[in-house]
Length: 102
Ligand code: TYC
Image (cartoon, rainbow, N blue to C red; front, side):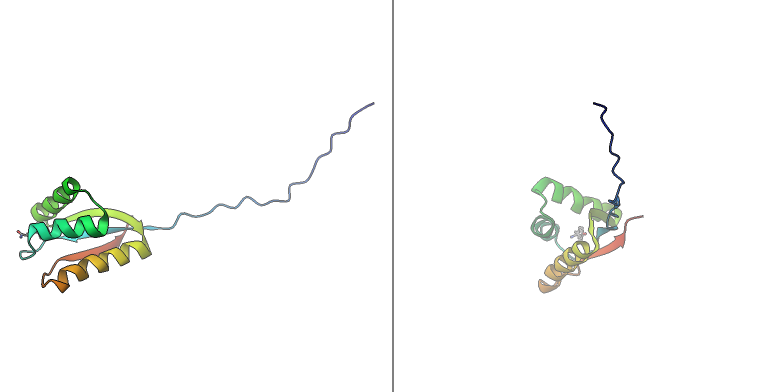
């Protein structure tokens, strides 16, 4: 008996899901915040280990700024605000900014 090939029309639509745009969190150097405090904030807010936090702090100290990480916009802005606020609460001008990743 001959078999019939049944061709089913495609009904599904392939949906491409766009990746959300990413934002950099950037640590800015200043002359007043103690190094150890910067390291503490990097560990607490950005979940860095001691060595990574110290390296990031030193890069910002020497070069004026250091990109810390990239996140979705919400996460980047929340973490930057939280970290900046930690400095402010302790009387330091420590500042974290965000910027869209190009
Ligand atoms: N420059 C500061 C000091 O000499 C330390 C420091 C490093 C502050 C990095 C901010 O993003 C910073 N005490």
